[in-house]
Image (tube, rainbow, N blue to C red; front, side, top):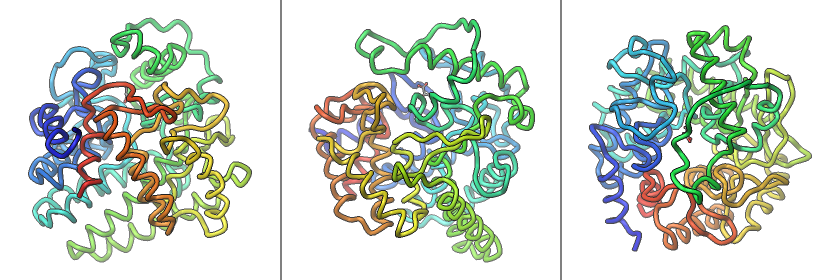
Length: 417
Ligand code: DGY
């Protein structure tokens, strides 16, 4: 039985003081886009907790506008890299003194906040979060865009899809040297097979150490980091974030702000369509700004620009052929399809429910209801079969990674609503 009651009990058990940890066994702090998906689910069952989830995450926002990937609100053990590795300090945040990581994650919190507002209609909540959401969007444009159109990230962890084969190219191009550290994520040998490899981790850690050596200075990191990537999933969510700030601003009576963010959404949407569509592969592909070349792989990230309404009709007709490849598995939709596919390992092939939720909504925006229904039905079958696992083998449906995973529980509530 993996119904509403058990989903709520997972979320209650994972709740700390004003936020929900993604998993008690693997991720014991507040994570950025995890909290966003959690808020979406909670909006339907515990609206006060949903609002607080978003508010607490925004309380970790940096003075420059960045909402960090991790907020270390407690001193929980069992996770690497913790605050002693990131060495960000507590001076950068505006609302609270809290240690954070030095990177962000896809800006899902902005559309999630709009979602929570739509469900609750709480204007005080809207007015409390809107300035932080707008500051976050400003930050993306000021610190993370070369052209005011597309935005970039500088760590695979910031994409949320850590070991996606899309990042192998840029990671291969640099030598991390001797990096010594102790991983804490491989709790047993089975989990070790389902987590990113040491080859990936050496590079993740080297990039963190470079960031801290450069004092998290964005301009220097833009010049010196070997990993500077325009990720198509991040850009799709950035379009949605701009649309959400526009909608919330209009609702609050600020028509000038609404107009500005509508125009920005349109600019980024057009840039995605004109510059990041790969006609040969039939989907959007990310771009390596350090090497100045595209990263042409079939990652589910390349289907998510549907959520931003980015593909033209002609592009979407081509995408449908690629979509069929993602739907050819027993359980849709794998995170990656291609030569390095691994059904059991993290973002190299398993099905994740957050990308399924985004894809379903994207397909509906494009009018592809039959395909959207399929993604939804397979997500529900997986939940029914295996419960709130972190990810799933696309052929057998077996649950992988952590159990009692918060966004899986939360999105089951959103699907049931
Ligand atoms: C991890 O530690 O595996 C997370 O994916 C980082 O966000």
